[in-house]
Image (cartoon, rainbow, N blue to C red; front, side, top):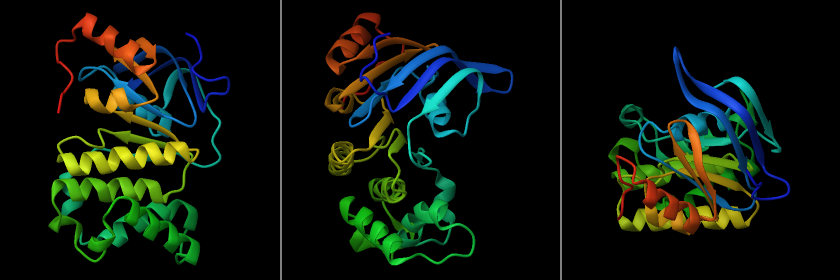
Length: 238
């Protein structure tokens, strides 16, 4: 595979990974470029979420190597869980949780931490919801809060699993705009998505199928390949 950039942010070489008795990724070779949004496409079960977990360090490789050229731990925004809605947390408290990795035990947020939280809420248009309970919000509002939490971590690798899935057009556009902006500021962004529009907007695209990379490169080329292969579960179109 041709590297998408002379100095990839993450190199994955010959990696297999998965879960107990189930291998999902098979001898995977992937380069994640810096300074852009990478869209990871593929039908359900193709390995998109497993790849994000591998890049985040929460799913170990059973073989092969993963080399990060990142200064801090990646930020990982998983798909929204209904369980989170039952926790008595405000929006500000939820976003502040993104700073916990930098704070360590028993440390109170510094002015820098508070600025990062406020900036992240403002960028995702949820600052006016800061004192609302997470469970009171709409689906699109909650999703923007979770993206703000990931952004508040200040990582140079931001991983998102279906960040705009099942949200309205306004929330989708806000999230897409913020991802474009942070990539331009130096963050490598990787999002798993079924959304053709989001993939076409990305700077780089990976097509997974059966735990293998079927195509990688400019979105137009990869999506043309996806159309030719006609996966059993078509990609979503807004």
